[in-house]
Image 1 (cartoon, rainbow, N blue to C red):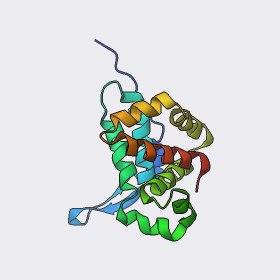
Image 2 (cartoon, helix red, strand yellow):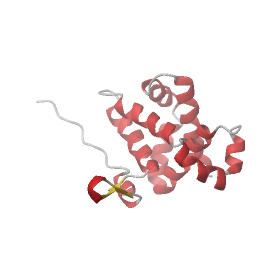
Image 3 (cartoon, helix red, strand yellow):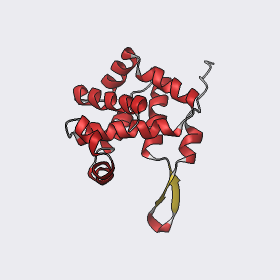
Length: 154
């Protein structure tokens, strides 16, 4: 019987700590990982499972795109106009940058170094971008903005 790899748990505690409460049908309220925590978990999951599935890369791309959707933009326009300007007023890239900074703020120095090592590895980023789905040029821009958020903050 082949040995199964152990699952990494980096990011789980941070996701729990930053969970947001979501009301579900029937009045049930459940804690759900925040968008920054989900981005962190998906990045790490793809690192560990990329040989078996591209699901985590697709999910990460979906999260990066979702961070720039309308319901997240008001805070971006109100609180980070300079960030928007730095991306030529592209709300998707500015939102991905902010998401990276928010994800970085969830973790300690050691975890941040682990994730940053992934994000600065061009081969890793190229594989992640390609696995994320169509329009890899846009995916690459969003991932680079996310990485810049990790490095620079907001």
